Image (cartoon, rainbow, N blue to C red; front, top):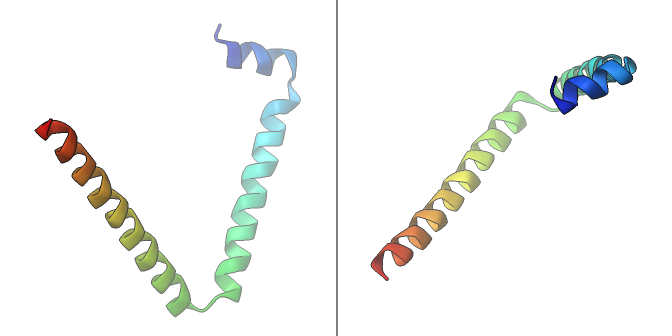
Length: 69
């Protein structure tokens, strides 16, 4: 038995807590979708993608510098 399974066996409420947290997150996400306009959510998603692409470019450049040495 892994450590995680042992912890769950000792404390049966762990899974219940996880389920409540998952439900809370889903409810929070739904409330935000109703509050924020669709255009904002699309813009936020695009901005997040651009930031990830920028990080990818920085990592690629760092890898290239390491490979040149």
